[in-house]
Image 1 (tube, rainbow, N blue to C red):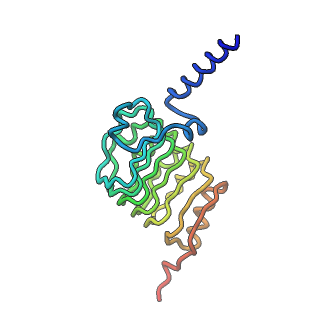
Image 2 (cartoon, rainbow, N blue to C red):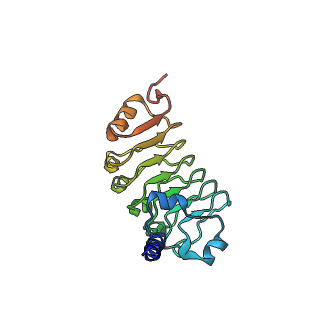
Image 3 (cartoon, rainbow, N blue to C red):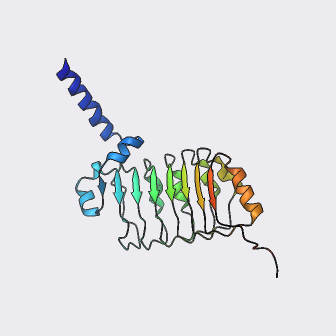
Length: 199
């Protein structure tokens, strides 16, 4: 009986590892692939891919990694993301900090399992209304961008608990409005500016 129990447990573990959407514990324990060459050698085993610091100007086609749950594109030179990024349907964590993004990639709004998004240190000027559909979003890091458009519709991210908006110039009333959108979230602001005050 013990042997059967061990075999059954092994099958359950194997099934969990081959499930496309991993839970937090499983995602934290899977291997991180750091090279496209190695990842392409076993695409079905790629749950976490780190392509940070590769000096990428364009994103290689990642649709072959059908089980991709976490992607890190930080410290590259990417100006825009391809439309197919929205097809990575099991993506839960996405980091693209320290790139050259000026417009929020609206394709990300299709990633309904997205929990953590880091687009800090880019040049984003606004957020799209469709972000309100990201119901699973828990952590959003937009530190050091050029945001001027913060639509009310993004309040739909009801699971949000962490929002970093430091090093972005907001007046005090705008900061209060944003806080009201996410009453359950811890929001980090820099000191308010007097942006509209004429000398």
